[in-house]
Length: 370
Image 1 (spheres, rainbow, N blue to C red):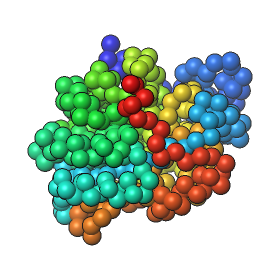
Image 2: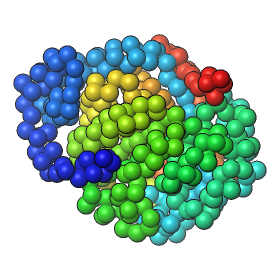
Image 3: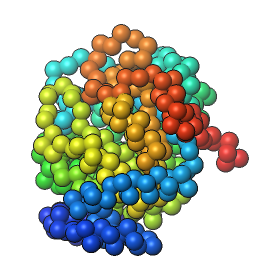
Image 4: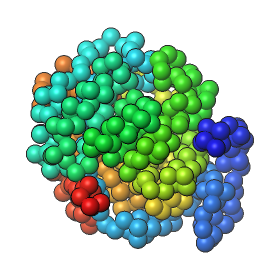
């Protein structure tokens, strides 16, 4: 049974009602349980759990150190293109936005990658808008041939593909797939994706499964916080992660928590998420999923990123640019969104050390399998 078929049996409104009706006693039972299940997780997502945040954060810290040690993996995104055929209302790449478009040449991608390598990065994330006519398989293959010798790990956050295409990318050196469902609420999904191939809810939702079938070493999922009730999004996100862990156990599952940021189009999030709510979601997910990687991007401000380092985060981006060609050239193309943490990778690594953790630039190499 696919994840789409699994969640089609659930009703968003019923899950929301269950979360909002939890009591402090429900939260206490969840924290006292030897093993946290989905019922207990629902309690930790509820407003009633806000009074237990200190205990949740302390437990999340201990659990993360037990499973991952005191290390934070660092990576950087490399944007290849901001061309896009979708009309996502919240995104700077929206095809209806009148902005400068650019798909960087292979040599430009090589220069961008060289810059990131000189900064210390050995793990990069290739990102683009959803424009298969611009970011073709031939184009990607040429770039991977140039980049692979310099990086121990290359992940992609591109348009959803069939399993066979993912297998081709894996054979060319890609080991990680990142795809955010944005929102698990079908009506909200239709509202914010009115046109383009991304409007196909099921095709996108089942992308991680196709990635698992292809054999990616790492699969990353996430919800774009601000599009709907974060508590219910958190429930579906956790359910999705558990499904992938159960069905694709050879892949390491990671979870991201991107909050909506200012972008071209000036979209206003209907369900803004506060810092305290953001922390509650992260700690609740850590307590439910002790072995999942939790990823934090430069969407978040420096002060918050610094304080979240000990709570459950295992991986962070640093020194990010969200426009194609932005690292080494004067940017002439529209960025996907505004970042909030503008510090250099060196500055981020320094604060990680000051927090008593070790910044790790390389945590994987294909040679480990040989």
